[in-house]
Image (tube, rainbow, N blue to C red; front, side):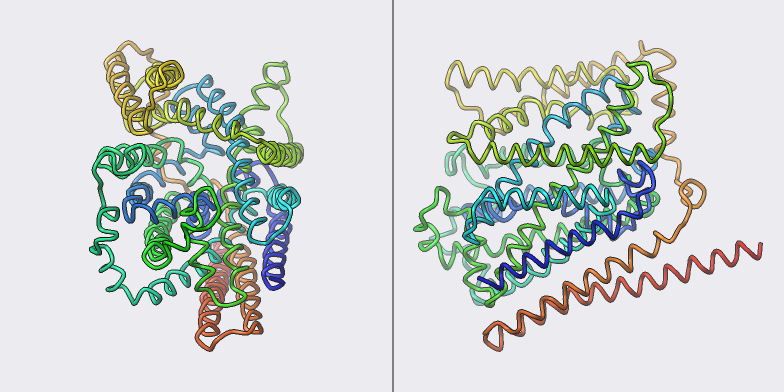
Length: 588
């Protein structure tokens, strides 16, 4: 177990160093909230992927793969399609809004009232979501490592807050990249070992026709076979549209606004697609293999939901000695990347969209200088980080899961109705600027009624029933608002036209942003981080293992070192390109 402690200590220390390294990149609010819109496609693409996964991917979703086989892949099919749409259209469009935050984009399409609703709703729900993720990760780590829960929780929360405070969006993207490297290196190995244990890909597929698993492991199942009619055709359709709802709407702007221009945003989306497609395969083969080979052992474990531990169980069974720490680091990576992204986004919204409005309301007309804006971001990050830790601590001390239920209720009753107008607001151009609230209200009606009906009549609404009616009411309201668009004022129509015109106007990076040493320094800093990580993995060779296990350790190290070397080569090319451009400008 000492090697696991050492692995985690080194890994967390590396994140802290990265945060401090990127702190010098922050000169103004744009740098802190969107990396100055200078992020490369590979940096932003890996960050987008990591922001979308967490420890739940390897617990809750792994449990679904253990129970129902490939049915849950409909969620990841929606994720992949979202990235495809981003690569074809959405990435360039949203980057070309020139926004600092997602809420900026929402204001541009609708109005200031919608901006403020979205800003305050995110500020309310965001820390609660992050707090629950922090608690879940801390519980997992404390259980595996045999450490007290609260100290682990505080340590993780402080580390995420520290590097998010010092490095801003740059640190978030950089740590996400390192975390993506670790996650893929370890999960690729777990997938390979799982397929080897089951006898290869052919034997793995043969289990799907085995009478013991064939009924459960269908792509779609009959109603009543699983609780709440999960994994049925209706469930698949509704969950698909529910998942893609936020992938192809205005709310996904935060994914792309850190890239240099529309072309880089498109490339980042395509990278996200490739990584998500590969991840959808390698992350869920192991829990299925666990069902085939170790179902009785897993179900015999003394925990509330044994299948949620299926991924961890098979990984501990198959990984070489000393690699458990890497698995835990991967779990850390998956969840911390979601937390830091959410934290940075909320700080950006606070500094960019809430405080300026409050200053205007109080009569302040002066513009804050860049140094003051950075100071506000630092203070806000520390305050929100402390609030997230407090939420996690409160949840850990609950004897009943009241906080978790409250968050799920808020998310299902309010979250989806708030998101639907952002979807249609992007794709229905002639939808009036005032239409957000009527559509939101219409979506809210069945959502609230499902909650009231469940309390008064003890009737159970499944997530697909609630979401289906939300979509139906939202579509009807959208049609009505579209028909009423002819009564919109000329000013509203002109502002909508200007929004779409800006969104479709390519970014001239050299003119609007300007090149700097950041262009190639991000390559060199991250190449060093990857090379250090790869070399540290080689230290696991000192742990007693079989020859085959040592080969697996070397493969993981080579994977990470290879990425580090590619980054170094890319940095040198970028530096030469920039120097050549400067020489040409000087001659001109």
